Length: 220
Image (cartoon, rainbow, N blue to C red; front, side, top):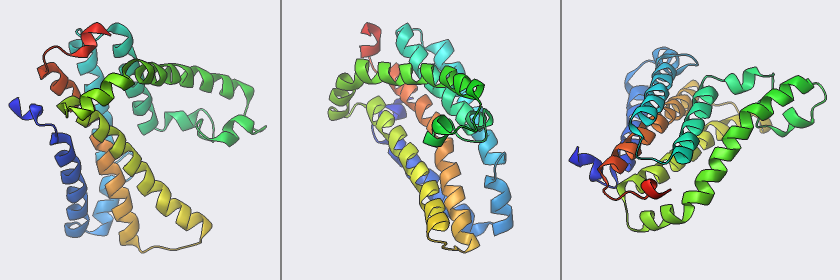
């Protein structure tokens, strides 16, 4: 367990995941790799299992964490689990995070009200975490506390996975660019492997916090 005290552990894990995706694309046939990382495929299933494990761990072993903070973390994990299952898009044909969902007259009012019920607890949890912990998080990050580096790695991995997906989609849609199959397979594999890391990073950050004595969560 002493390994979890290493601040840059999650950075090494993220690099390893990215290299593993690259190696898989190199050694596996394109057809097999597409099946491996496709929607509802093995990687996505493992990601959903990892989110369930993360939620259970936070619920069962987060008693030292203040209740509002624990609830906020669980809400974020629950939304990301729902996002991974595309439940946030099943409310309607449009994602609830897109402007046209809210402005489009073709979207039923009932769907918009249901979306509010989904987004309100998520917005509260994010606002609570930022307002309550941002200053302390920055201080802990400057001191290179392991859990704070893991939290930062979580946001970096989230941003990179989204950027990989959006970049090729935008170039394909607006510039009519056509990429070889191996580029699309590489894009998908990198994105799925990094998304699998997100709940893993939460668990690592939690274990790192558990090893840190005098954690600030006890007072917040």
